[in-house]
Image (cartoon, rainbow, N blue to C red; front, side):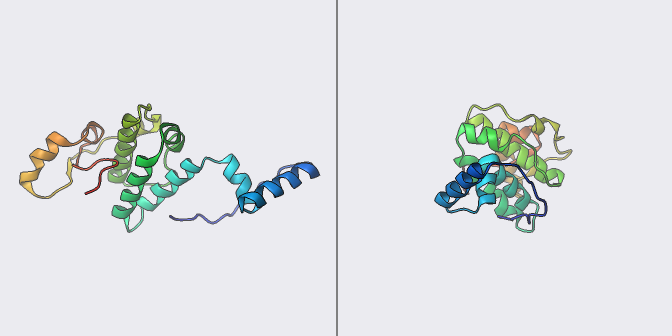
Length: 164
């Protein structure tokens, strides 16, 4: 996963006793104080989701989509809700934005979680995209693609949690 360099600082006022308690808790967790505080304040699943989406925009997007697939498949309902609450903070092509939105919607449906509102703001693709260039497979894909993908004009066979 891609690590974003830290370039900003946040200062908070605490008592000497609070700082000592934070230092001890961080040491017990095997973490530095900053990493410990961040892990307590920021959602780990949300950070994992954002990092996975950022990787999807890179040169190895096919593998990154598989990693995102694995992440979404292993999250519990509560973790999924927390992870996908905010839209991606990276600019994506319409194809990737629709693929990720469909993956999120499908994962939410499997966990009986309402999909996040940001997925509705992504316009479906104008032209259909098929997961295979073979003409004979297209009818199968038209029939078997999960609804979140079909709504976005994406026709695939494998879905979140599946492996090819």
